[in-house]
Length: 305
Image 1 (cartoon, rainbow, N blue to C red):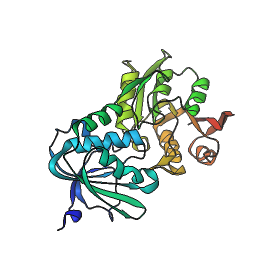
Image 2 (image 1 turned 60 degrees about the vertical axis):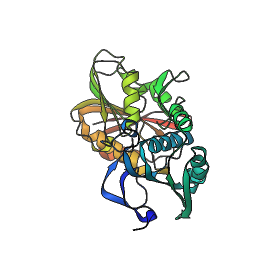
Image 3 (image 1 turned 180 degrees about the vertical axis):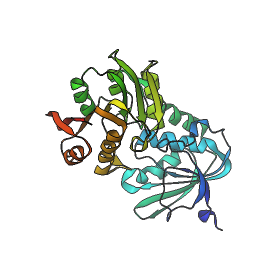
Image 4 (image 1 turned 135 degrees about the vertical axis):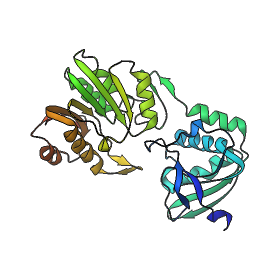
């Protein structure tokens, strides 16, 4: 088998199978795959190979590349790829800046690079520092590049925060991000517990730093497939993009999951971009729904189970 045809035993994300060979039982390292391993925890020089679908964000991508290069053995191969318009066009330049030897090819609108160490230690350290968690003064929260709205106040969440009632009982924040919505809900002493749920490991870790409250629980899980039940309330600003592509089914699945998790009479408070067609699925999943607010390109729904 040629070098380019080697099957990788470790993977980051979900690269197209026709572009890179990945073992069926490969170890996953993406922070967006609940239960995956963390590249941050891998001993330097210990991995024999890695295939990576590189993140689109520049800081996040360089951080992931640096972690991968640090984790790989000196003679190991990193196969990294990305769509040309989502970071792929910059991969060669970034690998050059890390001091790696690499080859590059273009297929299926992707740029594919195969790189070998050693990388420049100072470049690795700088990229890891740039992509690491930090306290962001602008939002008053701990955050990390790559997390949704990591360095600014998301306007949809801000609108929902302005309309949240004082909750009571057991609740959850579906797609919690940095934890701002759940933190606001916990301001009511009548709240008994609140589960912060997100499919992004980094978001859950940041929420745990931002919310120091014995009533808070932090779950690295896909909100569409949780086993939570009997909740009194749920707050949510659900995603509607996956891998950089709009997917309206994401938010609709969040709504359906919330309906399953709420007790009879429990309420979902949800914010969405105004163009997203959630009214029909809300009506089908809940007995009562109302639009609480509609401004600035966003709308807030309250739905009662």
